[in-house]
Length: 268
Image 1 (cartoon, helix red, strand yellow):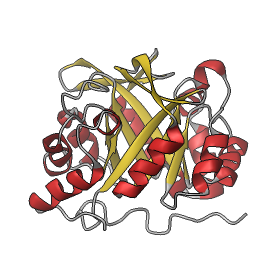
Image 2 (tube, rainbow, N blue to C red):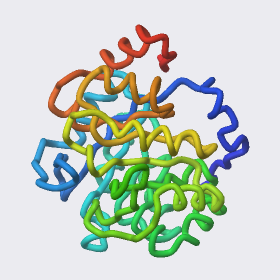
Image 3 (tube, rainbow, N blue to C red):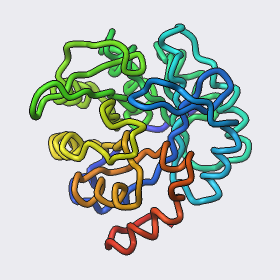
Image 4 (cartoon, rainbow, N blue to C red):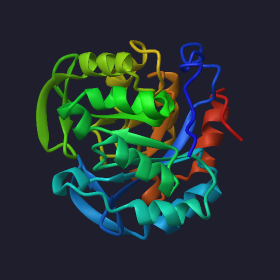
């Protein structure tokens, strides 16, 4: 298998010439799509493949599949879901949860993923970021960051689906990961996740303005306005949506139209 390389290193990021991506995020436990609040109190939503196809038909730019208990149980159980999805859906897929090695990344790519999202394993052994970027290209290495605010303007990195503290400062960790070769950051606010009360705009803007790789805002979207503000106010390069889509508060077509009305270019 031949893997791509990140030749441009996302040089267009800062001037926003690349239209923001609308990404459907599907958190998986066993065979089910689930959703919680603050990454806890998980509720079964339904069949992940059916929801993925629904979002694909609505015009999602990408999908994220996240096995949210894989690190806890030290296994990855979503590759069968990824293989089945890849047969019918033809947009980029990111797969995360339980990926601990270059071999795990290769398995995910062979199953149909385009990118892999790493959190726990990178926190425990940061060299894994270098290894993945060197082997498959930076565009394949998405750093997943679960952030909790602990003081004004300060956030700590968590892992294992927001269960474990690291003592790492979010800004320092993300900057280090960028230097190691991470090509993108999936930034999830544990405080806002699942609430539908809006993104943590302060956090997103701080990170987006400090690094040169794309930032995917995740956690808290509950309305069209929240989606627009993540781009216009917080400078997000993409938004990952779960709650707002799963509960039919709005759909991807409506989000894209709201962005057009706000003079934000979106992908067709």
